[in-house]
Amino acid sequence: GENVEQHPSTLSVQEGDSAVIKCTYSDSASNYFPWYKQELGKRPQLIIDIRSNVGEKKDQRIAVTLNKTAKHFSLHITETQPEDSAVYFCAAGYNYGQNFVFGPGTRLSVLP
Amino acid sequence: DGGITQSPKYLFRKEGQNVTLSCEQNLNHDAMYWYRQDPGQGLRLIYYSQIVNDFQKGDIAEGYSVSREKKESFPLTVTSAQKNPTAFYLCASSFDRQETQYFGPGTRLLVL
Image (cartoon, rainbow over all chains, first blue to last red; front, side, top):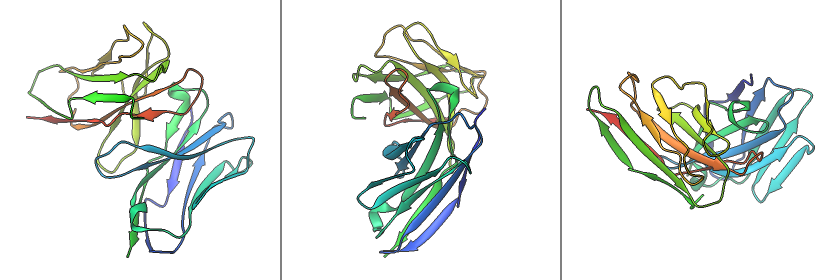
């Protein structure tokens, strides 16, 4: 089955700097790669996703890049703000159920 | 994701007791999921259901049971066989064969 690794586990950046979180996956059949943001005690919220027929996707300050050959994808946040502080989860898979696996999460702290 | 509700927000379980967590959605989603989240960790799949009256075990189904009698509802029972139930439980839903999952607000289960 799919296995997803995520690095780093914690990340601290100064406000205004960029943050990059990287995930690797094992199953070459995976074709959907979402990123979720979870604030303390709250539900994970989808912030951006990418499918395997696309190499990069942007939404304002957030971008995701995908390298299917190397089986890794990354979240890029530019001009970070204190409200970006949260835990970010990547996921990889196809269809649903057990074919879809979440990474362990990255705790991002944006320091003012 | 505002169309997915979970109750209660907090739940206390006594030794040997079965407790049931509620999950309801009005998004007309076909698939529903239950995840367990432990402090500082990712999301682990307990059970999922693609359609009414059908559900499948996830990675950590032991000590849990579910039912799917209605499309809108997917309750999770934490049985006395689950020896370490303290965790944050998240319900999610998605359209059939579409991977994007939307999460409920979660139920925090504590053992007395």
